[in-house]
Length: 362
Image (cartoon, rainbow, N blue to C red; front, side, top):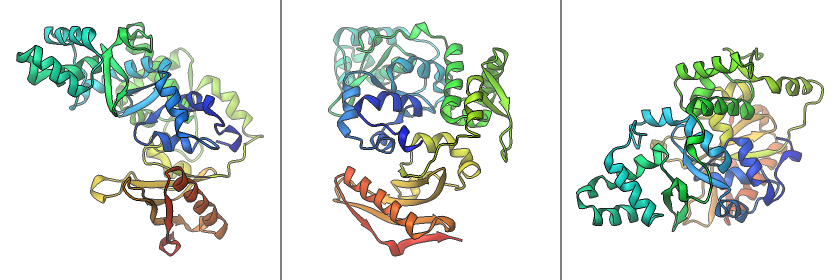
């Protein structure tokens, strides 16, 4: 992104979310904050509460926030992934018990999961123990969907009664998969089959089948990427745009502190070192790290920071900063600190940063 491409107002929120392939729930406000000149929290709330944005378990089964007009495609394209999940997987077919649960939701919904289990179990005692499973089966199958939240708990209702006005049956899995393959390329540019399979959760076999279908339609082409291994694919329509960058490459100079689940990090995870010069790793639960921020400066990742922004603390603590040697200049360090200050202010906290704890890589 160039500074000129950053969002400027509330009206830009849906287009920014569309361009980055949705937001990972939990870090969504930080993702938007990094992509706007001066993001306000209520900008997201406006679009979410007016049902332009919807939450759904798509892309590797994670809860993501996407534009409602794209949800059908994300949902249908990832049903093969959902059917392979061991937790809250998508059923192959629905039973009579599912029909009973669907009718109950249609008549009395919307429900939070707890409310549904209590109400449904009270009326159908023999199904009380399976109520939660029935609810999630209907959701993963596409018979019910999420319609916002009540007290931070998700609400579910039958598709026909959702405020979003869409019909999941209008899109086939094949059509949706081809759409999502092209969507990946529109977001990340030239990609290998492994890159796309990782981001979506598809197997390599089904990813290759989708690529072959799109190659036959001439919707994508095969390209070579300098200093990168593997066959790369590109949307045919993007070739002229990439050619134009040879003589007019936009300037990228600002610093951004990226959350663990930022779409940029998730999409490029397998190739961060090759493309951006730094091998950032997602924090594991055993490490006790909530936020291992990747630091983006211009077109390169230049390091990372361990950030503690606990809700019950007034401090935004930078517990550890790691920088590549060539980036550890006083000017860059000052710019990083100013970005820490900006994040702390957004979180309504005070920055605590011990510069002496900065580690410079050899």
